[in-house]
Image (cartoon, rainbow over all chains, first blue to last red; front, top):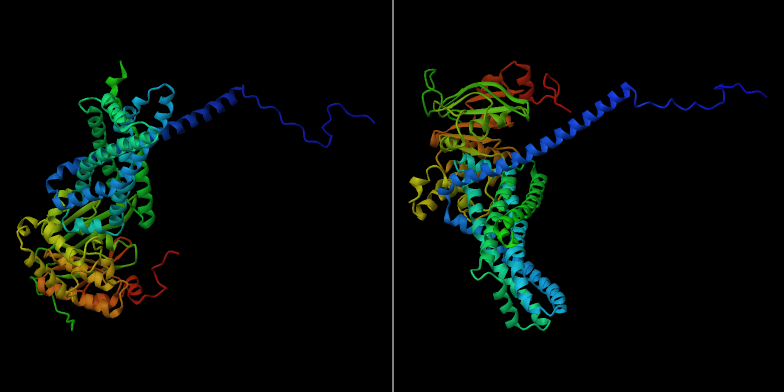
Length: 298
Length: 275
C-alpha cells in the first residue's frame, strides 16, 4: 500500500494554519483591541471619578442648603433628633466601647506582664480608647442605628409623597428634616463619645483588676500616659464632630434621593449605612493624621 | 347628613376678559428623554372646578405636580395669578405654594403625627407661620376641630393615620390641604379605590370647598361619575396633549372617537392599551 506524500486524504482535518500575530495585520488588530480595552477602562474610571465628585458635590450642596436654612431650626425638632441620635444610642455605644476597653486590657495585661510593665496597661487602654476606638465605634454605632433610622424615615416619607406634601404646604424639607438631624448629630456624637470613652476605660479597668492589677495602679497609668491637658480626649472628640456631620449628610441625602417604594427604602438604607461607615474610616485616617501627627516624632 | 348640590361657579366673573387664575402656555415636561407633557395650553378661571381625565400614564398627575410647583416643566409658561412659576427657585416657590393646597392620591399624611398635628402643621409651620405664631392653642384646636367637622370627621384629633380607613385618610388630607385657606386646591385621584358612597361624600366636599372658599379646583380622576358630578370644565389628556376640552355636557356629547372610547370604557377603538 502506498501513501501519497502530502495527501490530505487521511480522514482527519488538517491543523489550522498558525496565526502569525507578528504580521502587520495581526499587530494592528491587537493594537486596536488593546486600544479599545484601554478606552473602556479609562471611560469606566473616568465615570467613577465623576460619580464620586458629583456625590461629594451633592453632600456639600446639601450642607450649604442646611446652613442657609439654619434660622428656621426649631428647638422641639432638635430635641427630638438629639434624643434619637444621642440618648437612644447610649446603651449600644457604652456596651461596644466598654467591651473594646476590656479586650484591650486583655491583650495589654498578657503582653506587658512578660516584660514586667503591667503598670502601663491603664495608659495604653485609655490612649487607644480616647484617640481611636471610642470615637470610631461611637461614629459607627450612630451610623448603624441613627443613620439608618434617618434614611429609612426620610426615604419612607419620600416614597409615600410626604416630602411632596411638606413642599406643597410651603415647608422646606431641608429646614424641617435635614437641619435638625445635622445639628443634633454634630452635638450628640461627641457627647456620646465622651461617655463611651469613660465606658471603655472603665471596661479595661474592670478586666485589669480581674487579673490582679490594682485600680490605683491602673488609674495612675492612665494619668501618666495621657496628655495633662486632656488633648487626647478633645482631639478624639473633634473627630466625632465630622463623623456626626458625615452620618447626617449621607443619611439625609440617601433618604431624599430614594425612589421606588419599599425596595428603594431598603436599598437606600443599606447604602447609606455602608457608605457612612466607609467614610467614617476614611475621615478617621485623615483627621487622625492631621490631629496626632505631632506625636509621630517627625 | 351630607347633601350634594351641583352649583355653577359663582366665585368670580367668567367673561373672556377675566384674567385666568391659572394660565398655562405650551407646557412641556420630559424626564430621561421621555416626553410626558407635549405642549399643554389651558386657562382656568377663578373658582372653576376643572377635572382632568385620561389614561394611566397620560400625564394628568404630572400636570398637577407642575401646577403645584413640585416639578419643574422643561418648557413653557405656567402663570398663577399672573406670575410665571416656571423660572422660580425652590425658595420662591415655597411662597407661591402658600396659595395652593394639594390632596394627594393616598393622602400622604405624616404618619409620625396624629390627625390634629397633621392639620395644625401647615398652620404652624407654613409660609404664614409668622402671623400664626401667636395663635393661642385653644384657637388652633378650634380651627382644627372646625376643619374636621367640615369633612365629617369631628372628634378624631388624637387618632393616628394608621388607625384611619382610606376614605377617612383622604378626608383628613383634604382638611389638611384646606387648613391654610388656599386659593387653589389640587386633588390627585381623590376617589380612586373608595366605595361609591365614600366617593360621593368626597365629591360633595369638593363642591362645598368651592362654595365656601371660592377655591379654584383641579381634580384628576378616572371616575366618570365623579367627574360629571363636580366639573365645570373637563379636559382629557391623551399622549401628553389635550385631546378634548369642554363642559361635562360637551364631553358627554362629543363625537371624538378617543374621548368616546375613554368615557364608555370600550376595549375596541383608537386607544390601544399596551400589553
